[in-house]
Structure formats: C-alpha cells, structure tokens
Length: 401
Ligand SMILES: [Zn+2]
Image (cartoon, rainbow, N blue to C red):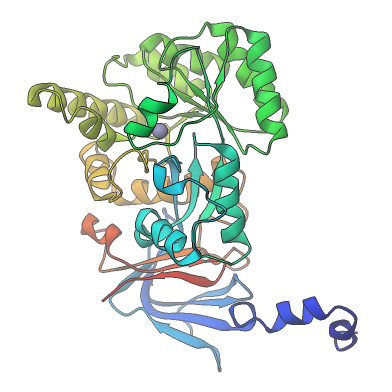
C-alpha cells in the first residue's frame, strides 16, 4: 500500500521525500529545559522526526541523523510573542514583497530572537494573512502567525490614515463602534474574514455593555479577546467581561488589590509590554518616563506574585525589536527565569489552545525550539543570544557563533 500510494498521489510522494520532512535531526550536547518547571537535562539530546519531537533525554543520536552540536547552548521550547503588530509600512503589499526581502524582514523582527509563534493584535488583516500564507507555503521562513486583523475602537480613537503613514504605519480600516449591536456585528465580520482573535482598543473609552458584547460574541466563536486598557475603569470592565488577555500594564492607573483580584477571578492573562512605556514616552521628561516605567514594573510584580498568568508580549512592531530590555524589566519585576520561560512557552500554548503540542519539549510535541548560547537561567542576556530557531523541525534561523 505504501509503495502504491506515490503512483496514485505523486504530490504525496514529494511530501515524503522533502528533506525537511524525511530527515531525522538530533540536537546534542545542550542543556535541555523540557518545561519551565523542570530541571534542565545536562548534555541532553532532542531527536526530531517528521517535524515532531520523537525522543528527549540523555541518549545517543540515532544512526543517520543530521546532528546539530549544541554544546555550550541551552535548548528551550520555541518562544511565543503574544503581542506583535505587522503594521509598519514595510509590510505593505505583503503578497508581493520579494521573497528574500520578506524573509529578511521576518528574521529581523521575529526569528532571530527565537520567536516561533506570534500573535498579531492589530494590523490590516488581509495583508497579514497574505504574509502568513507565504510562510505556511514554505516560500519564506518565518514564525506561525495568528492575527486579530483590524481592531474594534470608539469613533475617532485611531488617527487618520495620513497621520498613521507619517508615523510609519499602514492605514487600517478599523471597526468604529457606538453600541453593543455594532460591536457584535464587528466581531462577526472579523471572524467571518478569518480573524484568530479580537482586539478591543480602548484608547478612547467605550461603555461597558460594548465591552461585554465583544467578549460574548468572541466567546461564541471560540476566539480570544485582547483589550488595550487606558484606565482603571477599563481594566475592571475588561475583567468583568471575562476577556482573555490584557494587552498592557497601565502605569497611569493604579492597580490596587481589587484590580488584581478581579483579573485573577476571571483568569485574565497579561502581556506586560514594560519597555513599550519607555519607548512611548521617549519625548517626555525623564522623570515622567521613569515614573511610568517603575509603575509598570510594580504592576507586573503585584500580578505575578498573586499567581496571575503572564504571556510574554512586547508590542513588537510598535517598539524596537530587541526583547532584551523587556526580559530585564520582567526580572526587575521579580520574575525568575522559570517564570519568564513559562511566559514565552507553556503559558501562551495553554492560553491559545495548543498545550497538547507546543510549549514544552516532549515526545509527540511539534519541534518548535529556540536554542541559545550560554545559560539564560544564570544570565538572562543569553535569551537573546539565539543560535537556532526551529519550527516544525525546520531551521528557520541560524545565528552566528
Ligand atoms: Zn500593541
């Protein structure tokens, strides 16, 4: 049967013989963190077959396997960035950017920092989906992209197209809503056009029934809701509505115990975007920058100390690309390495329904891996010293030694 198949289905034969799929890959000699809570396996081996992890432990590379020597390196589950945007002008006409240039741009923003999965929470949806298609077809190397597409906002909350262009961004046909009915219709339309989640942007406030309507309709469609809050009232309303992810800390609104309790009760997760505040306020007085940055760190500290879920998210695409500062600020908020690792791997995989095959290094899991030089558990800077980014068993980025 297996021999007869290729004649009947030549495309299947091609799939079987594509090296990336047929090859057995063995990563040897590194310290392997199978999960954020586990002790690393020193001098461990990860075996990858057909894009999946087939074995992990202190074992020999199988015969005939292609070996990547990871001596002196740390092997981690592939990183997620749960707050990114493909809205810079460079992504315009995503379907026709020459492949080498598109790949270079994806590398600069994502794969060179080890991101194998990203959640884009606000960009022109059709354009981002075109970029994703080209990655998924294998035309260019890049991360798995999920995207909310256009955001839901109050009328006038987002600057007009000419201002956005001047600021370096693509214009976007956002859904401006005035009522719960319009919000429900906006969610339906986004879901129908292929959105993987819904982003509610509260740059200007919206009434609580609108927030509720968005959350209810998105829940029916099984899509996570991300909220950009501006005030304490926004955070409380988002918590009451039971949204999935708070897209930012809010340094201009204090988080007292009641805020933390409300968010915990509804199991809301947070993408802290700590370094975004420094970037956003870079034209403001130094003391204001410092105050906001310190408040954001204090909020994250209160949140994770209370047991709240943190998803690594930096507002990538709206800020500088290098996540080193974000990791450093998370550590300043009291997050130990294992917790930062959880925010990059297991926590997002769980939150977005992929816990059975991503977020850990275990047999049967997808071979999404981030391999860094050195030991990030003792030196956090090592998290950005990425040597290999592997997605579904394929090397999508190779760093220089
Ligand atoms: Zn953002």
